[in-house]
Image 1 (spheres, rainbow, N blue to C red):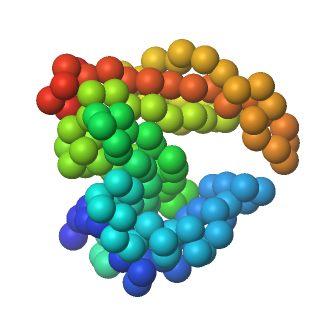
Image 2: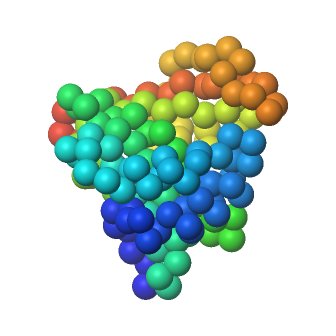
Length: 151
């Protein structure tokens, strides 16, 4: 059975494995994911997608005053193109009901940029040489809602 729920410390091993697989040169350290499992007054939200009890994807973000920033979305390579990332983003949007959502993505990450565009995110700027290993621009994307979490 597939479920999406808040990340717990018990999920961190699986999340870190996906993080290393997807973001080899810039993977977040374990401590960052463990911290997301703490109580931050609901400013930070981290969700996991579980299949058969195993972590197959995650999303992490922060929501303040109607603005949602999506920090990271990643899916196990064997579960890509199955709607996992879409489901994670939709659940985070449902929980946070933002007025605006923001994210950044590597310029060369065409699959992610295409996914975000299909979900209503639009490019609004760039950060020159933001990423390293290899050096690359970050494409800034934003999605506007009508204030109730809906487009």
